[in-house]
Image (cartoon, rainbow, N blue to C red):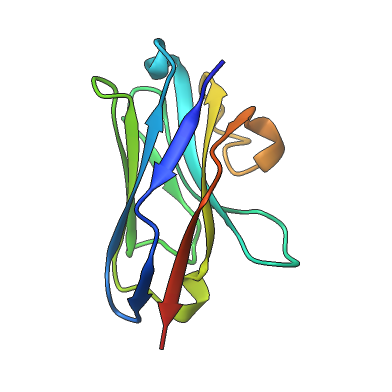
Length: 126
C-alpha cells in the first residue's frame, strides 16, 4: 500500500511558477515509478509527467515539455513537479500517482497506476 499526499497548488498569474510536492508513505518508495496527471471538469485525466524508479529518466506531455520538470528524492520519499511559465490552460486538479516498477510503454496511462493522491488545485489566471 502506498499513500500519496500532494501539496503546493494555488492560484497564480500566467507566466508564474509553482512547485507541487507529493509525499509517499511507502517504505519501498524506490520500487515505484511516479507520475503527475491533471484533470479538468468533464475531461479525462491527462498525463503530465513521469519519472522512473531510479529517477534516471523522465517523460513529459508535449504540452508541458520545456516548462515543467519532474524529479524525485528516494531518500525523502517525495516527488516534485516544478512548473514554470504557467498558462491558463494549465489550470486543473493535479494528481500524484504511483505504480510498481518501470513501464516505459504505458507510463502515460492512468489505468496503469494503482495509487493516487487526493489532488491539488492549480489555477492560472490570464
